[in-house]
Length: 276
Image (cartoon, rainbow, N blue to C red; front, side):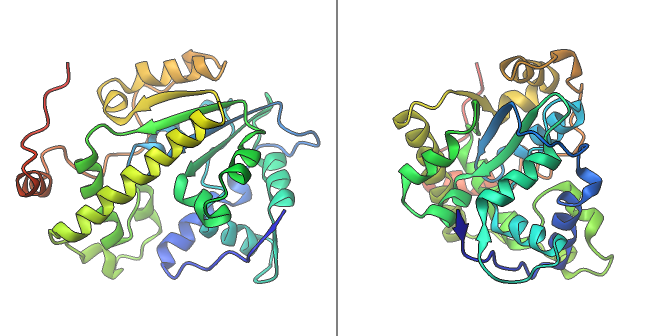
């Protein structure tokens, strides 16, 4: 399948990060055979997908789940191949990534935000499902506190810093390090709408095409990282004892962010009820 040439990303720090994540340094020994088991992390921004993907990669048993359908990562692949234009062959790309990013036990993983699917197939849900049909298991990553998630997304969009790993690839004088995102009800509301639409689109796609999935909530992951990681490894048929006891990357936000309370007050939501 050919698609349009992926666009370039002008965020230099993010380009360096993507080039690292797509580099041979992150590869497993190259395989001549396709993966025997494939899974997809079905996510939205700011739901803990980096924590989950990092844990799975570190087991050495679950492939290297990255945002391979993100056009910025596809552009990174083009850079690694010395290409800067022309049509993009998604089938060949998928095959090459599987040959490099499948762990020795035959497992390949991918992380997909729904917006990545939309950028490739627009509203063609049958085409999305056709692509996903090669995967054996799906993990829907969600976050119950959508307002906290929206505030986190707003801040990431303003700073263009998406994960703690980003700091490794920024110059000390990078202007993004000095950005202090301001409260914006309009922008946070837009983030909230985007997140809800993306998650509901995932649920509709998985349900309508009867794709097998489990749900993993960000709040449960934060409360018991080791326990939830073990559960996930069992779902994937992998050794739960390979789970890490703590995430290898740190949370960027704080649970008592005053911007969250400010937005809740604005819309009359009040404090989030305590988990039971």
